[in-house]
Length: 467
Image 1 (spheres, helix red, strand yellow):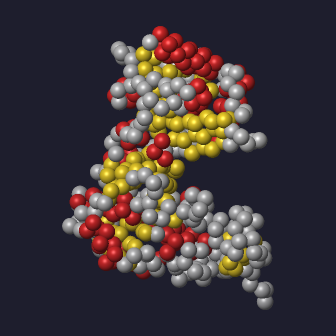
Image 2 (spheres, rainbow, N blue to C red):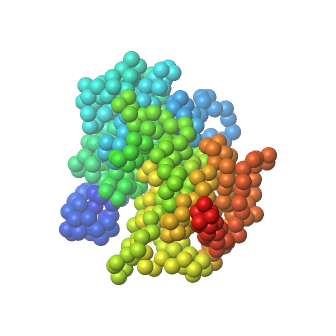
Image 3 (tube, rainbow, N blue to C red):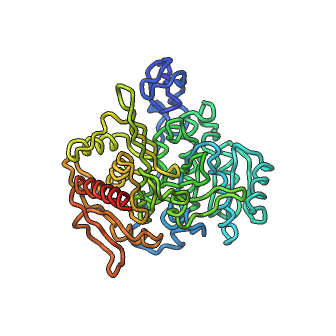
């Protein structure tokens, strides 16, 4: 009789090893490899006795949709991130750091849907029913008809939510606590997580209920468990935030039924999460208009324009190697901007420490921030504050040229709405707003921008001497 084969699977990244080892070759973590039976659980190995399949019904693409494709929650920021609401029959995975507010967000969404007459089931695997009720009372959701359960067994959960009327929304908090009788491993392992998620997705597709799964994240910021889980679900949302600030950002990284570059902004309070309709005011609330090294960047997050302050500090160093510290932006992008400033603009920063920060803990991912970063660096080095009513955006190339960016009109309209009357933008930019009273200063290259900042410094010095 052939000996049963076993696999050694890393519980952190899902890498399969032929034998046990102390360190995983895939992620580099120690003591994460566990022996598991490939024959057990859903999707067992080829050694299982095959059975004859059954024919499924084939249908055409055309046909009437019986129900509304989406379920709007009424929370504008959550609906924006999901693309207009939860899609019926979809599986949504929400990840975030511990204590960031995932359960609070979902409890508020569940209460909002319940008030609209939808049947919502909240299954908690980490807290008892009494603890969930305490949170609901704090959030003002105790008067709703949300159904609660505290269970971690996959089969029991499926049997519970299958009884009675089909639920419109099912929340599982969290997937790392689920375990199934078909998998011989501890809860939270790769096999158990994969088995539980697959069972929940199958229920959502068969019944048309929306399944929301909560996932923990690793210290690198990725959702814990095998990466295949993110491929299995229809949408992946990350709930981000800094513990030093009250705001939270719900960021979409995958969405089969909507855009993947939208964000929803919330502010944490003792009454729960409050929606922030105008994030620009949140990120510019504590701005010091007279400080050198500060520039306002007009950015875009999906279809939403956002204004955020970029702060730079350039100081002479006594070290052999100058320090480069970046918070909220790509450090490699900063190195490129410094190289372009030195090579094409004559700005010597080789003997200076450079500190760069995006105010409010916000993180910028688009290259359109190059112009704002360069302006802040030159302003800090020159010791001259930039105009308080001016915004900056534009992409800088290695040749020093400034390239146009998309959504110029939306950026300028947002700046005008918040009281900014001037802007420095790339030349030949399209979509300029018509009939605007703003002063748009177009630049062709980064040396032109540096010359303008240096010229304003010289003018300020002359005015000071005349006075």
